[in-house]
Length: 406
Image (cartoon, rainbow, N blue to C red; front, top):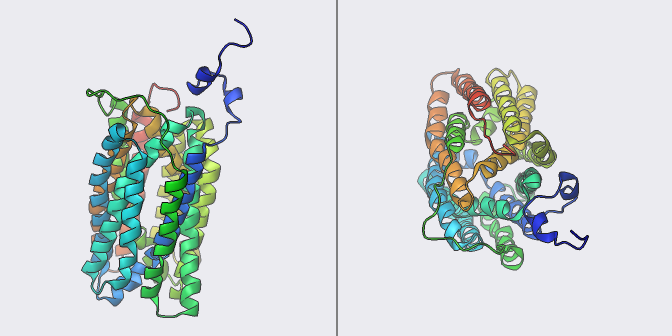
């Protein structure tokens, strides 16, 4: 065979040695999706850390806090399941654009609500949009990148997502220092970065050329994926709303005006950890990296259960952020590695569905434990730690995929 033999198709199929593939740059669409994640979380997280106090001011309780994210994420989970499967047939970009558009319209309405129920409705509609876009977006990343750099691709998007999540509370804190008591105005202004997000998607996000999908698709899930979903469900049952982290910080002595700063630090650690963990996931393969992330998560929540002051609480929260930064790229890379060809959207839909459906009982469980006496917070965080450790153990011993990259 001559030196001029066609090598382009071989490269696209991932058959060249890893040393040749390693320098590959992330596709432009993946980088654009990173910016959409950054801008969306900038908009969303300027609101999110203020919700506990906002709900309390509207007469809400700890149960209401658990219901807000539990119900919203459960509704989003059902939508993700259908959106992921639909994207296998319709393409990814239309659903990505639709999901971001819905959130952009609904989220600023938080500035108009007058009851805890209104907060639940707006938050649920916002997460409905997230449900439409999430699985198609992750499937689009899987379509675009070589398996050897999936960890780096998902790590990039998660890093940008958390960078926006870190900056959002900082913007909120600065705004409220200048305009104290104007939370509703801040909520309304969240539409600005949301609209920029839509412009980025319209201009830069594109579906790759795809093979036509026949009327008869292969089964959506492999056997190993069922095991992974069981592990994810067990972990998610303990991973209740992060609003409880903020409430714990306040209970342990962090002053209210500094709560957005704590949320900024959590987002910054998540962003840096995800950026660094992406290449690590590619080297270790996703499964052991995910086990490590969940074990760090369990240790951090155990620390929060028995933390005795603000400094210890904040340190444990940053450890939680580190765990998320490791686990998130690993989770998505493992779902991609196990997905059946042509059904990547359905695979991510099932993954998000399980996480979201379990979020409702998780939020209600944490809220109920929290309200049961003076040791309620200790009990709630100890249960989370135990569930995360159990999920990591099950993943380590039971989910042993035969495919490369798992």
